[in-house]
Image 1: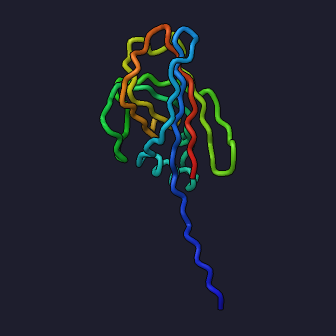
Image 2 (image 1 turned 30 degrees about the vertical axis):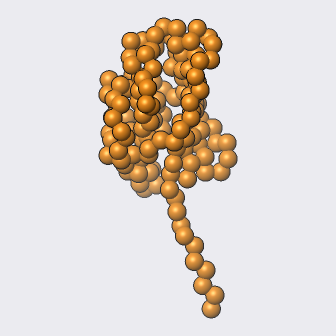
Image 3 (image 1 turned 45 degrees about the horizontal axis):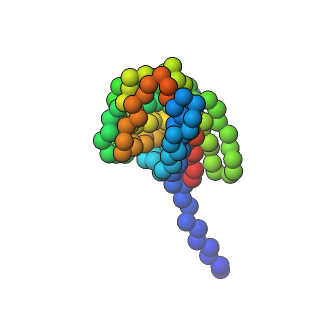
Length: 149
């Protein structure tokens, strides 16, 4: 008898990308991995059990807490939350969420953390930068957040 052993893994990871514009001119590009928090694992369990009606990723949040992300994070500090711009599936096992923060949104916020949220507000992923972005009316930020497994 031939025995085939597979290692079944569905580890999720995220890639955070953004571009910062000042008065319409690109002033920064940024890309880094992020932390998928425990809320995402609970949301996936609810989704596959058919009980996760509002557990799909639907929002982006911008916050002010610069502490190191941990798996048990549940929210962002002083968060400005808005719907995502869109979602696409660039290849098998990848979901790409697009987002934008317009020049007239979240002004006065010192943005250092970003979060992907489920429709019901559950935090899915969190990213913290080393340096805050002092959001002003001449700043717009656009980006993508790719979740893979």
